Image (tube, rainbow, N blue to C red):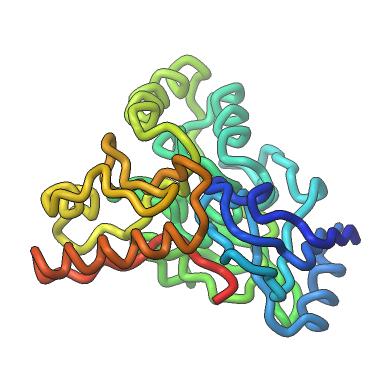
Length: 279
């Protein structure tokens, strides 16, 4: 097992902010994962760092991150089996090369497969759990395989309990052709390439039922609002950009102001999609 000490949070989060993580553990197999989480008690599972912000302090909570042993992708009958540490970009490239259709809507979404499964990443209409057959994981009771049919999934919710370490998943895909899959990917890539540039965690808030967080923030006149080095993007109002060395405190203050203004204007309480670790 690999263990790293005093890791700057800026190096493991796409928002590039935060303090120092005291310990990051990288177990090499499911046995090491099980032993580690039984020993640690509380811990945070970190994937690609695209939906996580760490506080501006020393993060005492142990952080667990899967290493290269969990970056495999293999063909199965009717789809693929892939490790939870596989970047979504790499998984999609594999599907294009092999003419496998079903996750084109994930094109341009950053992060790793494990995090995508946990939060059921995707579009408002479809999430990656819609193509999952089974999710392999480890919790304090040991190694388990969860069937998709037994999980209560929803919008940005994979139905998987907290403190569960996803290690792999089997995805159901359809055989197609390389060119057909590549063409189906292009509209999703084009849409996401139009999103804001710079350091961010993607969407900050979940879309409330019947509306869109970005629309509400925009209508509240908050595009361009700045706190320190953090600002609401002028391109998409549901993005906070680390524009000038923002601290996590800057970002949290901006989040509080946005929530207060949207509630005042529309009576709607926005809920964060991004996770802030180290409270």
